[in-house]
Length: 545
Image (cartoon, rainbow, N blue to C red; front, top):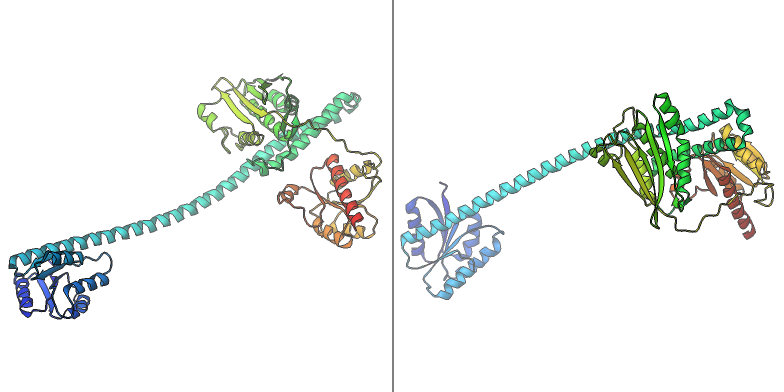
């Protein structure tokens, strides 16, 4: 048992001697004493007692004053018991002492045994209090250590998650690249297939204008949709924003186009695999929907491809359109294939989830779902294992005014009042030739350059009305060349034609020195529209100056 320390504060020498004798008789206590209460706080600091025996009526300082000093000096949470020993038996004195911080009260004369019992009780309480404090301190240290361990574990987990996220991003990039390549190959199948038909039997087909026109329109549609595949990497699960322009579309016609575009997959490839797939059209007369034609064709195309994959032994695919009330229409792609389990149905819209082998990305249905949601539509899947699958897409009816098709003026430069002299700067010979032919068809005079440095030199000869330039050029970029041109002639309109148009336009601002940005691949209507805008702006700037 540890020896407890007791401090005796009493101005009467006889009282101090008596209390010391009583406590020493048990050999359990070590004592210090003072008859001058002014020494009380010094002894408390030096002796560090476990218990104080305190008289009340003393010269210089009363016991109440000592209690006040103790209360002010002791840190919060410290339990130092005080036993008051006094000859004052008034109840008010007892109440005041206990209220001032005393823990017990004993009147003189007192019995020796009672003093010992009260001291033991108070010391036991202090011991319990100290044990509790030690347990609390140990608990707090345990909590701090556990917190440090958890923080370290969390840091390690975050580091591990960061590595996993990076690995997943790399894997996803590979998967998406695989998916893009797959879809490009599908579109190239259409492009190459119909081009080969035109070349192999050109005389017979070209005499039939309707057939030749149909082939060429299909090739053009496939080419535009191929360009849209690139945008998938940026558009994946993108929310619809204010820049999206959704035009009125004939949904039944769009499904017919998709059926034609996918014919090499569901007819030719299926037959090569030894099975027969039939595509049936059940198309109603519908009001227009608002949408992006390339994106919605991608939806239908992906669903048809999935349906073909779900029928390895062949079967039927039905494309159906119907109206739902006044505000919605829907289309269905139904197959007679193997169907899906409930678990696969629930997960099939998750990105990268796939049940197919052969390097398939698992992005098809998730991209389809993203496009449908961006069109403010809904997608439902009804399937049964062994009983086929029906995918239903609901879309809102177009609520605006029917769009008037604007045909660009192409004869004799009438769109600008006069033929223009245009400088085309492009390092790819094929692109340079196509852009030049677009312009010459409109009776414009065209000069070409293969690099930014050559383009700047040719511009120096003077006399140009417009500059059309690529971005990535040898020796000097298109933007650098445009800045040099603007420094020489501030009102010279410059159109930037680039495959990086989406990235440049995403910032919401045109690059310095550029009046319009056009995407590759380029169609004549976009070029003529941009020319009209920049030439009008140049004329206004010239008039203002």
